[in-house]
Image (tube, rainbow, N blue to C red):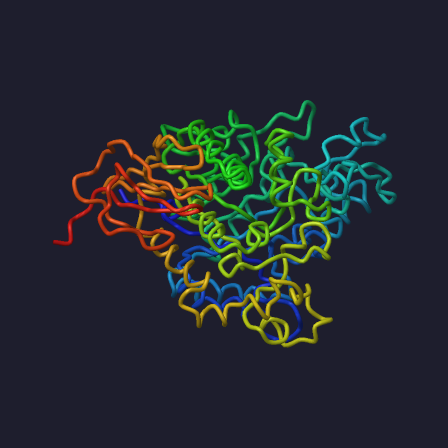
Length: 546
């Protein structure tokens, strides 16, 4: 049986609005993104996940949607989107899009109708209360920025619920007509040819609007059935930062196969990696890998270091969270929502090339499918002068020229300012300069991503931690149908010589696949060298060259 494509893929997360402007209006667009597909193909990604591209006031990065069936005119037309799909397909690249179902913008025609007319068919599409709810101040997703979860609507004369911002009223996902609409939305985009959806805020989507608010997993099952019937191999990727014991509920299990979501972001693993990098201690990752549940067939983790939101540390203990804050977000303006960090990975690691390589080598070796945020491949930084999560949503830095090659518009017309000051300014960090440098971070990313795709054991195999007796070191193997690969990552600063216990698959001399630098050609697993902040990928069984 051929493995599902996403199990050995590499996903690149991009925002159309900040990637490439083709017409000089200061806003990235679909033709601009299409013009950069060759770059993405060379980089080694096979799937591009686009943040919301629908019409929106963009008070929340496009997640405040006003039309789920359209493309924001600033980005182009549906024709431009169809052309993007065609050009991507020509290069073997799939396109995924965000699916925002928990809420709409308060400017959405559905909500406007619901507010204006008590008899509107859309009245029951939202969640209302005649009296001020007792839980008005409970459950805010963005504490410090939006503390209420209910707001009074004058025209309707009622309170409406919003788990996110007050301009994003929650849809009543218990309502059959709303569920039917979800199916139509998915069917529409699948018909155009998208490869799947990243389901935004999945726990809130399935949170029953009645009391008590129990999860309604059947809604996920219904979405899975739509995708399965409408597309041969499309995927549903859930954003679900939930307790470990609830993770399998999101995958579902029908005769051993995932029957709800096919993929989940591995938030627990992400937070363990951040803690390990902060403490220079591999223990948190070993602990999480030991507790990750076995997934049903076709189920997969989506692994990441940074995404388009904050680094969410909510599942860590207060002591652990403080250790990560101290290392990666020491200043108050680097933190957000009391739980997260609003910086990019390169700046959190102080631009230290060895630490950056170690972090991404670690990510790429973890069980699952890696997700890379645009700009991470060149070491982009953030703009802390921008509010909340917008700090990490700045234009892609293509060149050292005006506007970083993102747009020909006057700087004041850009959708967001390019980074023009500090060590991560576009004059110092950009694609053009790194393309010319064989030792650049971009060149390293190209090599490691292509190497990752050649190691199918990572995405589809079984992972097992190997005890080498050093807290600083994570050693683990990925065992697949055709091979075994050993990964060693040293979080400490000391050079070490490790004694790796006997492992399956040592039929031939180990072959070096990737490393932080040159090591002796003869590899002895009983005396394996690894430098401080170094990494090694070793294939244990392979066909000898001679």
